[in-house]
Length: 131
Image (cartoon, rainbow, N blue to C red):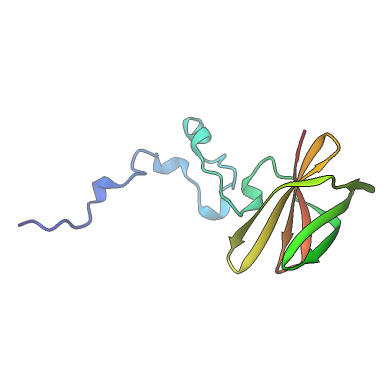
């Protein structure tokens, strides 16, 4: 009986031309090195901020309450303006290596802001504005 070993013809990436893929050091996180037919199929890498083209990643100052193991953002400063948080509409956690990043979607007026808190660096970032 023939064993089911490695089959090099079963690779998923054989249809991608080898000459169009550059050296990894020169590759772009947004996938510009792929042929135009593959640009819409480049996966979004979670936890890698530079892989998301819509991400702001602006450092901000946040006034938050830390109570009973939970974080409650109250207001934040961005571009010399203070935004009062009316409510936290959604929050979640993601792990990126040894870092735990807490994400919050905050309602301020008619806009939603996605902010994140890095538990390792203790820094806050404004990730997205949803209008």
